[in-house]
Length: 311
Ligand code: CP
Image (cartoon, rainbow, N blue to C red):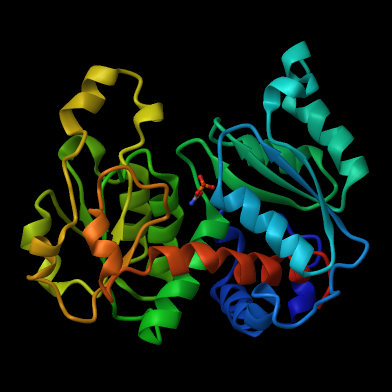
């Protein structure tokens, strides 16, 4: 398979990519490192325009797509304040997409509704990249998560990855769990019963022969973890705030907990964090979440150049 098979592809779900294609993105991401830091110059996307449409707040995803596009010689146009777009006049997402595709070469969409990127891909002849659709998926976050695990541990297969926090509403863990299963990682899901991994994801994994360990007590599993992937409780997605209050602050990673962990434990978080990782952990060798956030630049450079035909 050559990288040309990427040209023009939509990336809505992590399952839009085969394991070979994911490996190609990760390999190219490694090569993009000196370009992502600005150490070397890259013109792979000279003349290309990326439309960033963000109908939900974002720091990392939006800015790392922008940075990736600039570092590769391309440009971005954007909607980042939906109230300044014609959405407020009642324009549908389908019509917005039909206009934006005429102004750009690819569209990145973050939207509060699950399925919005699939709909956008249906109406766009240009590639659509899902930057998070409600509690659905966040496939480019998954690519940078996989890249970070490989970078830190040398591989993914056989590693025990503990996903902890809001596994119900957290979209990053939905796409990551599916990808980790494809790569043969061992999965442990730690959440209060109210926030466990949705049945459809758990069933999908089981149908592929992956049986995740489920529990609610992090202390019971921390000693065996190779990767601890921490997530924020997604307050904004709770239909009933009294339910949120019941689980707010239920996990907190601190140096006392880490005494039980392997010395080589890799702690990741898609960020933003609220209170689930104590600031004291930032100073440990285990904390890799800021490196993980930076990795969004080389990984998105790699993906964009492959989709837009720069490589
Ligand atoms: N990880 C992530 O999606 O962060 P942002 O919401 O800041 O984009």
